[in-house]
Image 1: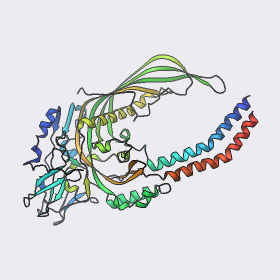
Image 2 (image 1 turned 180 degrees about the horizontal axis):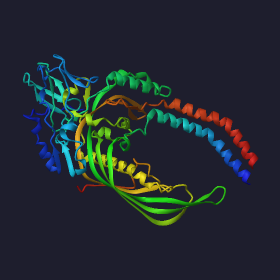
Image 3 (image 1 turned 30 degrees about the vertical axis):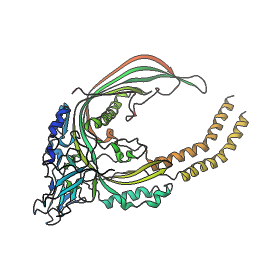
Image 4 (image 1 turned 60 degrees about the vertical axis):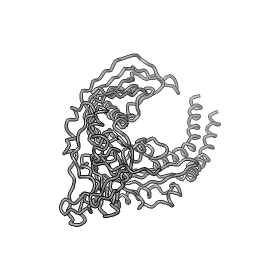
Length: 416
Length: 91
């Protein structure tokens, strides 16, 4: 990673490189303005003005470390009406922080409102920093041009201890054939809490499926080894309208490819879904010092392809009950999704992650064990001790063959 | 002749038991440890409402086949895209 020149501190980060509306207009989006959150810079306790605000995952509240006042942020779904009017959506609507990224620079400089010092925040990993002069905690809470700040966040409710227990239990069930380097270096306390970038998508779509289906009429046994199946073939078409509420799509290009051979991204994908109805207006105090955030680097245009794939998956599942007559099955040859309207909201969702890099020859594969930071759903990839697995698999095969092959030979000889 | 064919089939099946056991153990280890097929299943978790279902089923021809099901059967493979897959936006 090369060193970057700090971005010149803007007067107001929200308008540094054009307003959300300007960016949206250029790409035919309609902007759904997210209600204003806390100001950037020092965020103070609402009651006593202190800046030491902590988030408690076990209680789900923000808490002032000085006066112990607790509060929660409002549900984004309620204040923006995100469950309403999905069937009436036309065109592409994006929330304020979901407009296209205008500047990929990760480092953002803000002025400490406590002492005036300039503080650099590396938004690739966090959205707050401590002023090195006056020690106030500074944070970015409103939209910035590099897409780092979302509209909403779903705070962790699974604590680190609970995640550690889940991961330990997962690994304990997979000790026999675990790669020795993994087993030696495994320290469950190294699990880290990440806020991963996603978008929630509401969709008003029409899907058309075309293919062929067959209905068996009669079976004819030709001889002992062959059977003929006499069937009627049909051209099958299904078209359906669908309203989708809160589909979740990854917006990190490093994580969106679940077929990657370099890292087991499907593991992080597998701990979805989240209870996105409980997403609250973004407040960087939810990150604190315990969690790290990852910056969104995909825009709606790129994420839309993945959302479209999910829309088609939903429609294929929805069409299945209408295919009962086709006892020989259906072959879908063509599928088309018409996205009449969609609504996108940029969010950060909580995941506990344990990572291990396996080196196999010249290749490196990153294995993840992930715990959903809200539901506790756990999934993982544990690297395999391939030598031991081969030995057991083919050793057992040899032992079974040593018993069965003589019997098979006798049968063949007698049969001849 | 029939007995000979039957004993031949049984013999080949017994031959295959050993290698088959090895393959089954290897695949079980891969599945349990790597979870390569684990993924988000929106069809069972995402709230969605389907309306205005239009169905067309047109008889095309009679066929005789040696296989038990239609070639390329995929009506239950919801995550696998069809040969032709398009996205349009006319909202």
